[in-house]
Length: 107
Image 1: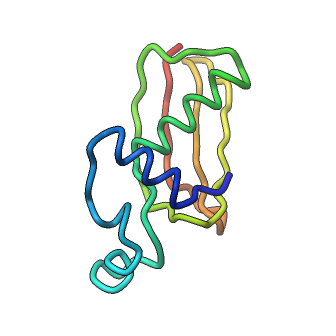
Image 2 (image 1 turned 30 degrees about the vertical axis):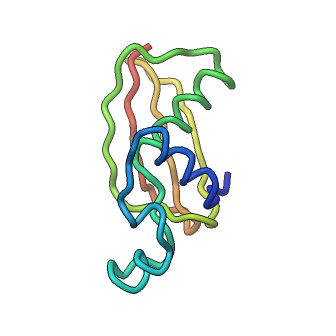
């Protein structure tokens, strides 16, 4: 999936998150040194858990997340869900295939 400006704005607005790295492209690039707007970690978690719910019919009861690298607006991210003996593993990879988010889910 490819997150866009609108998705980042809507998610940020829902959580009253006005941090400029999610909303102001010039600030994210010129001040913080990111290549583009940064995707909210919570948004990535939501996308992964919704993928688990809609594709596999599983609703998480608890989760543990590790955010390893930033994901950026307008760049493809790959979402994956893998059944494990102790629950599910959810992962998000950046546009270069690097692991960005690793979540362990109890279902």
